[in-house]
Image (cartoon, rainbow, N blue to C red; front, side, top):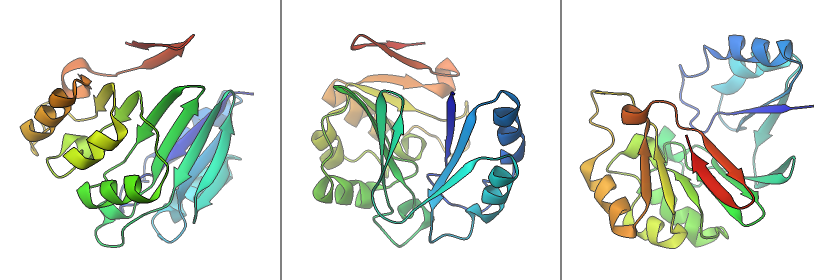
Length: 200
C-alpha cells in the first residue's frame, strides 16, 4: 500500500486548517496516511483530529524518530530551539542508499548550527532550504557542513517578503549548489533512480 506522509515542520497556528481535504483524498485513493508533528505544541491538535477521522496514523515527535518508507528511511529530529516558532519545528532527513534529502522547515541559523553540531548529518544531495530562502536561514556554517549538491527553495512568485534573499542565493552559489526555485519554476519534483537525480 502506498504511503502519504504529511509533516508539520513548523507548528505555527493557522497552518493546519486546510488539511482535512488532503486526508480525505489520501483515504479516497486507498493510501496509508501519516501526520507527523511536534508533541509539545498545541497547534497540530485540529490537524490530528482531521487525520484520525480519516484513519491516518498520527506520529508526535519528542525525540529522534525513524520511519521506514519503502526502500527509504526517514529520520525525524525534534526541535532544537525554544524561542520563536521557527526554532520549534522538525528537521526531516530522508535516506535511500547513498542519497540523502534534508528538509529544514522554517529553521533559522541558530537551530541549523545546533543540528550539525549535535546530530550526525551526512553530506546531502538535496536540501530544501530553510524558511523559503530567508537571509536568516541556510547560514554558511550549516551549508559547509551538509554540502548540498542541489538546493530547493519554496517561495511564492513576487512574494511580499522578498524570498529568496540574495544573500542566501549567493551562499548557495558559492558552494556550487544547483538551485531550483518554485517562484520561477512552479512545482519542483525530485526523482531518483539508480543513483541518478532528476529535477522536473
